Length: 328
Image: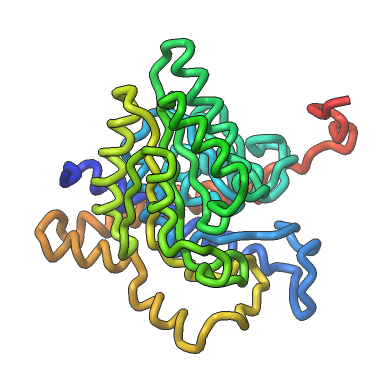
């Protein structure tokens, strides 16, 4: 199932937007954190997890989604949030801890929440599985349209929440799709050192549902397989499990020395960077001209520049608002 040209344009632009956005965040994040690194310093305090290299997973899946569809994501959420349509300016402000952020600056980058497009994420491993199953159940019970997609990392497939939620989704034939982003590293632990099975997609057989494995971080193949799984969910045929081989071009978090990576691994991954790879493919097959892709990249950069300016210029939260939106 080859995407239409407008869909291909959307996919490429969102991938570039995500990369340019994170490039900007990475640079700003280090302000005030040198020469001695302290994650509490600078305009963006706290941890920061970048999704450079994993952009194909987000666009390949989210190209099939509508605003009423629900997405739950991980602590590495920017590419998925951008692909789902989260307001880029408000997300940037949230990352900066500003009052104009999605949650008034209370959540930060690991707790992005946008009710307008049904997107949420969490810093707790596999935490999104239960809420995604619940969202899917609510839609089925109420006869409402929409599917739920839960993005998780390969390490999260070893958590109890993964198995419990997937089991119930299969029993109740919920409109749910679970997407495992396999970047080979659970923080600093290699997949083969923590997971007894080579491919988490094979675990789908234990629940009587389809399991798909997609090698090569290919956005077009992801689009094809995700379309099948999401279509199955919309038809009321139950959940699917997809595992995608993807690449984490950055460390687990900003400041990660990455001493655990084998020598030469990152250099090899950068040679497979999915954005220049997709650009070359779109040019080679005649789908786009250089000028068309340049225009998409310019649009992406403009959106990022606007979002970063909005965040920098936004006001900090008022101290007296610290106890609002807090459960007593």
